Image (cartoon, rainbow, N blue to C red):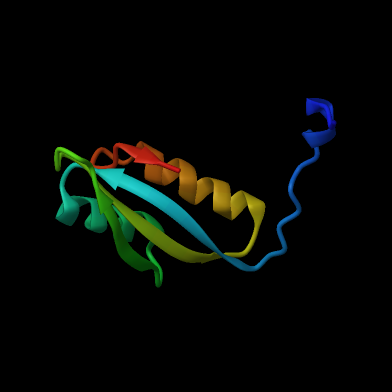
Length: 88
């Protein structure tokens, strides 16, 4: 059996790559607009699902990233936006 310490290695990602962010918000239109305002470049945004009670909608945002730093910056910028509740 493998131990947890065996899984401490960082995953190697080859750049450039298309990265998928899962973005969750309360208002579908505002969430889409927020994604577009943060990424400021071609991004494929597709509806993913709605919560059981219909309060939240999730979207997949696929975007070309060229480095780890760029990928992380987009993630942080999405998280900071007032119309976005969560980013995975």
